[in-house]
Length: 149
Length: 339
Ligand code: SF4
Ligand code: SF4
Ligand code: SF4
Ligand code: FES
Image (cartoon, rainbow over all chains, first blue to last red; front, side, top):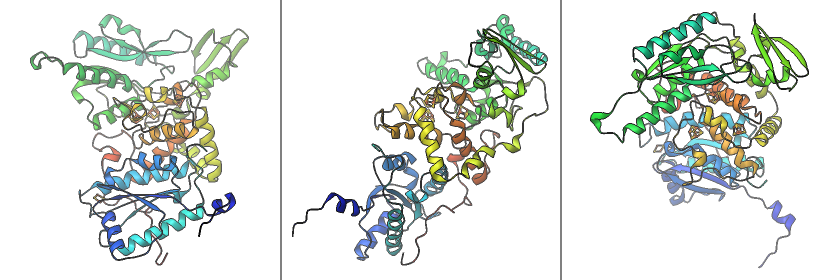
């Protein structure tokens, strides 16, 4: 059945768009496991796969926000389990500083989220996505640092 | 101050005469009253041009990096047997010396390419505060006597204690003695109130988020993206800055406010553990953007989160180039079960 949405309806139907930048070796594999185990999670994430969280230029996060992402999630291997040994440990410092700085200028804390999910944690991956989606939904559409606003 | 200046000239003269350095980067008298300007001294005779006073504003480490990196670049085109070393002497107060340490930590040049002429620093005059004193009028004459600044404009004369006109960063400077020097020219007791260093940051943190965002938006809206702040910053030495890269184009060159916000956020983020609070960027900004309000937060975080102070120790690695297993994890997101 065809449905035509009025403007108001489509505004009410806002769904958060979340960019998830995840490392190839742990979180991406965790997402795969969630998939093959048929664990349900909200379809709001767009996954970008990178070799390692250490590969993530913080600019990716800012740029995603500028281009209209309502939230950005970064996830990689747990500390001590990085495929490249220390990529996530240096990344942890970078992200800690970035998150604090963004909070300082008044950006909502839940717009940028960081976590660890290993390859065997399909369940945790789904939980993280549920949690992140819920947190970003609670914030509403992004209005800060967004282009064209 | 006079003694420091005298000693400085003597030392510079000696270094140049003995060919221990190729150039001394220092300050000379500016063309306007109450100003000094960076200069490059290459012969012993010129050394008498050097001055050291509260009008010396810019962080000279920037020029040291420029000279040495250009020299390294030029040497690549010279036959190996014809290559020569260049040694740069530099007049360095506390913040300048910290920038030099950062360059050394980041392996920009060798310690042997540098002769540091350390000078004690009592802070420099904030041009904007001076302009306010002069009521925005052109300053025709100016003098500094006995800790008092006096200016003459067409409309009249004004006076104020130097201390009231010092730059904000100088008032709370923690390292007003060089942290590293080959030749030290005099000592003075610290005058700054370093314990108040982070007060403005803490006050800002206590504002509601919307007020902080409004302030950020307002300040960034002033920025015309002239990049003077970056060009003068000793920690901004990248050959091609992200701001000019086109593949990928990190930040768009548009009139959209978010483009400027991103440019600034990223420029500042590149200062994590690398900003020495020299105030050069704020001093050269033609639009009076309150950069320090944001940069100082990075400094505060670097210290409170990682115990790091930018450029104070040669034994410490660059903050973001290292890690500790014990680094804080409070910011890591933990979903609630069943969430
Ligand atoms: S960001 Fe500004 S205050 Fe910090 S080191 Fe660079 S020029 Fe100095
Ligand atoms: S803003 Fe960043 S990329 Fe540009 S010169 Fe400074 S440190 Fe380098
Ligand atoms: S100097 Fe001022 S106006 Fe120029 S780019 Fe920096 S903040 Fe913007
Ligand atoms: S490989 Fe997963 S974080 Fe480094």
